[in-house]
Length: 172
Image (cartoon, rainbow, N blue to C red):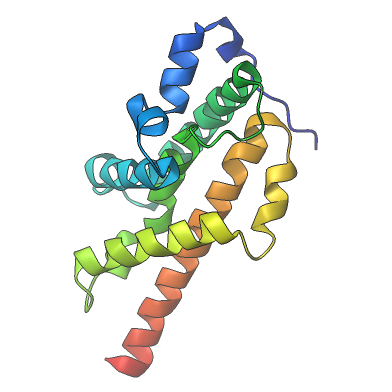
């Protein structure tokens, strides 16, 4: 299967592409832009994804991932750099995937603790890129920008569910 970069962002003005890719000033003006993109992703999850079930969350995530691949790939091209640090739309759209199955994650642990653990684990997986996550960055264009963040979010989700299962089985 050959991954193709969507072409529709080529017709957007550069200011629009870069504004979306950097979430406005978050990616361009603040230190640690990936962390701020992740914080924005937490807010995105809370406002948009929180009431959704599995199917709605997966469908909305698929749409967000497609848009992020298109915009981030075009931003890479226009900036002339591979996976520029100020491009943080990838963290933003991936963050809600950390909390797939949210109702199963909260219970004995308060919601704020699950949020903090999810945020910390996501940042760990996104920065360290273990478990083959680093290899995903080799995918072409926007796919490489977004895929490693999606993998980091899914690894985070898996660890959160495993921790919840372990807590219920052995700790609670």
